[in-house]
Image (cartoon, rainbow, N blue to C red; front, side, top):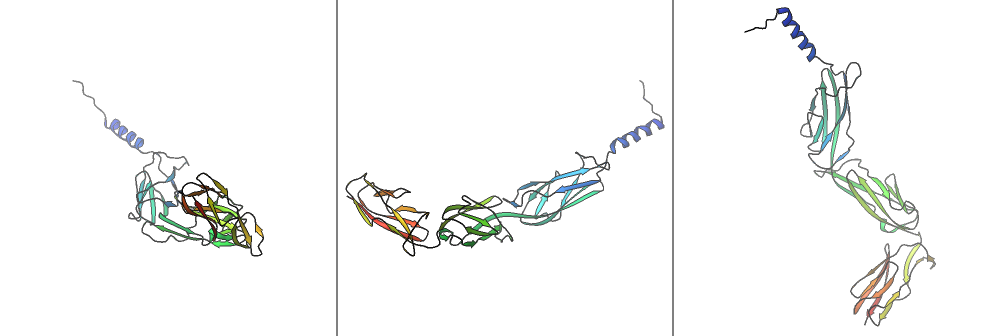
Length: 279
């Protein structure tokens, strides 16, 4: 049997090589970027953090061994790969250490649960007026989120738009203003009318159909305080009983079934109506 014999010098040489092989570059700088999300959807949501580790020569270290901590684990914990797990709304500091390099990232986590946006009077607002918007956002336990301001978008900027938290009515017409905060959105129906809009009138107050299938065009007019006709006032039409008569968005009334119904035309808070009978 052959036995391998090593001198003490050779043995210490192998040990030294092993130690040198185990000692690689050490992290010198760690940079952690804040998460992009400001408002979270739910408890338990993951927030992967982006971070950069550099060695003494400024080279990126892809497999550096890091240790992550959270100053408030009840608010958020952190996994070995730097993924933050939200537990509840609150503040914490995420710490990371690798070798002698350290970094700290303060986090203010908000779990957005509800969003309420109101524009009192937006359904009938005169041209040139502004309405202060009321915004209330709450977290998962119902606490109001301070300074929460959604992003606003209007379906018709020429009719109405939002600036500095105020709804500005520009020209007569209708628009939908949408408020978005985090993952929540709320829509506001806006109807802008001329400043001197006073009343609505119809070309008839009652009408009798002799049979089903007949139709008649009803004409609605908007008037100012002096009785002059106003243009560009948006109108909505309604039938009190669609089984008797229907009405188109343009005001054409059609007989459907025997009976009586009321057709109304509405512009904001102004309303007028006509009676219809189908024999």
